[in-house]
Image 1 (cartoon, rainbow, N blue to C red):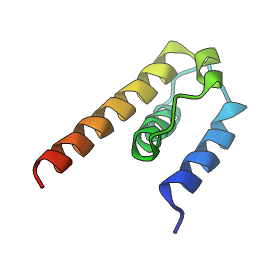
Image 2: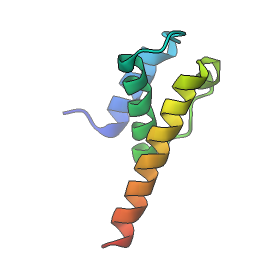
Image 3: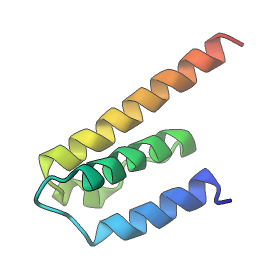
Image 4: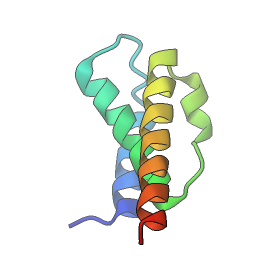
Length: 78
């Protein structure tokens, strides 16, 4: 099983050259997952993300924010 860091690297590598301009559910899910992995690993948003469409950046931001919120909640309930 891949670690979160390995998964982040693999997904980031796959997306860096894609920059899909048309929205699709699969693409949105991939960008959301990137945001989730960024939050889990504590990594910064990659510079190349600024060249993606607004919907892709939003999916990353939502995934990252939701995951950070869940992580904070789980830490505070322990």
